[in-house]
Length: 105
View 1 (cartoon, one colour):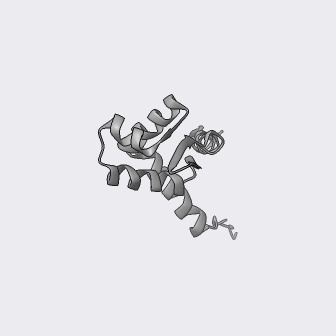
View 2 (tube, rainbow, N blue to C red):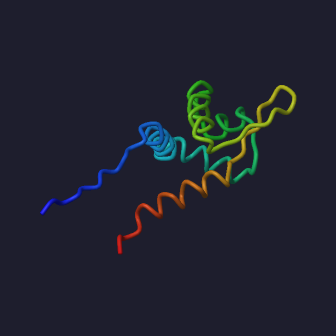
């Protein structure tokens, strides 16, 4: 009797994107930055690195990663770039993780 094994097709592009998002969300400094932005609703990079006592270059690198993962959004206000949390995307990511972690029935 032949058995059929269904092999899942792994979409490498989607897997890489998921990995990028999870790495963005898992870093302690990025979590601290997200929490600070959330607390302030929207804030410029100078306030972020000044208040969190981070180097400007390090803060910019972390914000770049968070932007690439769509975790934060930016708006320009004159010479300042204002950051805010992209709650729609963050909630989407959290729901996807919850779905994955739910026990199989």
